[in-house]
Image 1: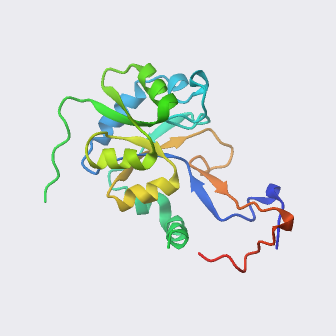
Image 2: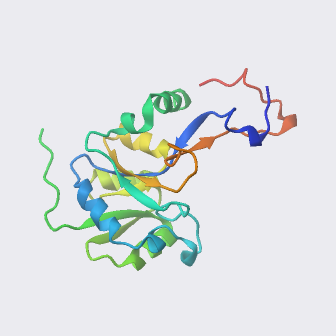
Length: 199
């Protein structure tokens, strides 16, 4: 039964979580958080000056929230999200570096420009061509962190990376600050219905 897009709260695939910062399990998440908190929100959560939108972080975000140490991809995404993603996609760790520096992975030229412009003494920017390449860089310890969406948190979790903080924005609905609705939109005459869709 088709519904209007305005009825998204009653008819949606799943609630998408806002982007999360991911890193290695052995990374110092407190250090990543403290370095990022040194950056004024107006610089961190704005992309207009770089000719793009949502560079490094979503432009609509107002804050970052550190996640508990026990958080892993499954806990962060919650079982319903994890199951939806599955259906759709059918030794001792080394000590973190002691120099107190984090290396942020950027995707593309505009994100690299934004990251470089932040000029934080304890943060360097490492450019990659895609989120997947950033995940590889983080796994290889060529970078420490990147902000990604829920689907990418799922992929990163499969690679052993964990979410360490989450974007927050001011909202009116309690408990809605870290998620948004995902809907499927099709043309009326497309012939697409729920029946042939398989997860």
